[in-house]
Length: 163
Image (tube, rainbow, N blue to C red; front, side):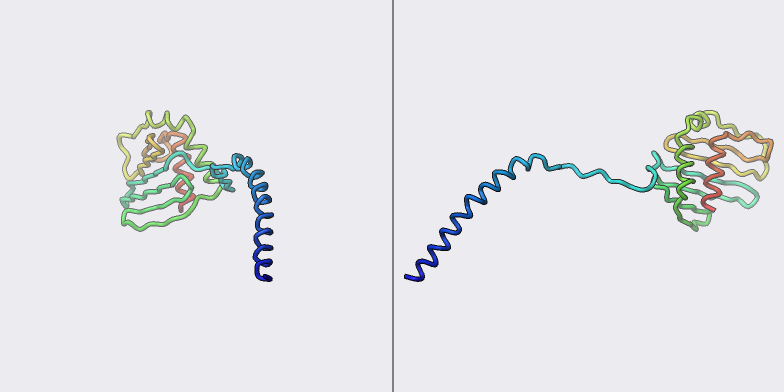
C-alpha cells in the first residue's frame, strides 16, 4: 500500500505541472510571431567593396615589361609580371578609399571613349586600365604626352601601392 501512495503522489504532482506548462506555452506562442527570420545585418569596420574588379596592365619599355595588377572588390591585389611571378597584398585603407572614388568618377567613363595613343613613341610604357566594362589607357611618352587625368591617377596609385 505504501508503494501505491508514492506512485499516486508522483502522478498528482505531474498533473499539477501540466496546467502550468500549458499556461507558459500559451504565453509564448504569440511571441513566436515576433521572432526574426532574416539574418541580422553584417557590420564591418572596413570600407564597402569596389563595384567591380580593377585591372591595370603596364607593358612596353626597352626591357619589354608586362605587369598586371588586379584589385579585387575587397581591396586585395595580385601583381603578376611577364614571367608569371606574382605578389599579393591588400591596399591600405586610404588607398582603397581613393581607388573607390576614382573608379566611380564619371570622368573615367568619359576617358574610356577618348583614349589617345601617340603615333611615335620609342620605348614608352603602355597602360591599359579596366574598371568593370570601362577600359581606358595611354602611352607614357614623357612630359609632353597628354594623359587622361583619372586614368593616370589610378595608374599612379596602383603603381605606388603595389610596389
